[in-house]
Image (cartoon, rainbow, N blue to C red; front, side):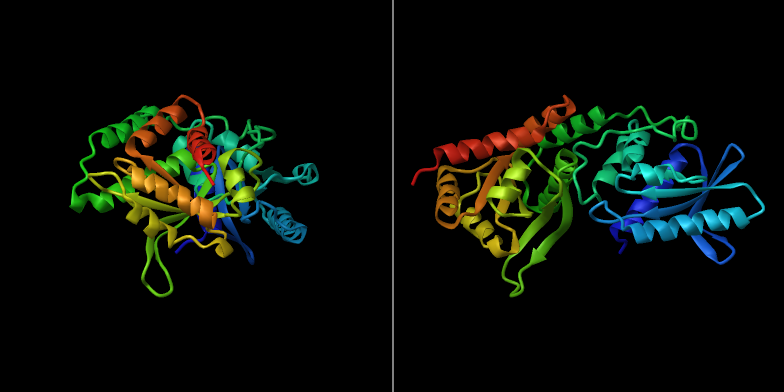
Length: 335
């Protein structure tokens, strides 16, 4: 199984491909094996890719990579430009290093401004939020100046197809896995800047309980619902449950979901997605669990998903919609 650093390198290689570079991974110069070499317009670029979950890479690691890159490219007879690529924000001092091209997350976001597919892949592995990071073309615009033409099939077309699937969805028993996959795809699309998928169908140690998916709230978020959940519900992880039911979910479903929540493990919040939403008894159970145990369960339906998809395609925040649901729950909560 690939870890995020390897995924990040593959995405970067795809970015170079997107801008018409010929890419060869694991390229050897002398005793040094670089992550890849890229060729374009008679220029060669020897690349080292560095990734960390926080986006901060130690000075020691950076210095070693820089020294290796510059040293081996100077020794080679050909003119090769050394490139250091990081998933965080590079310092001005690093960016101004002589004979070195540095590409950081702000540059990468700029390069992917017209490629939503690769951008979504990138966001799906970043452990931190990109809030406040302004895409930048500094020092790279002349090199990456002509991307490939991408399919005219747009993000809006993709969203319309998801909405159509939801509108036409038939909650047949044998369709439960397809419903999970559809909901997962929608959650990833709606919240990929905020949440990081960490796994699916996890069993408890005693094997009695299993939840469908778990997401981690990304670091460095200073606003909206996810910050509220982190600060006031002391949760870093959110359990997602997908219920492919013909009728509304009941209090029994809510109490089952509560069993997956564990405050000491920073896992005190769940979101249940179902075809029809909750019945009155389930709503009372949600309020009781919050009031008595401090665990938060939000319930959303296919219609709610459609509303959030429409919001995102209009450039609005789907998180605001969820936040309104939380506001209503807290305002209506009685002692």
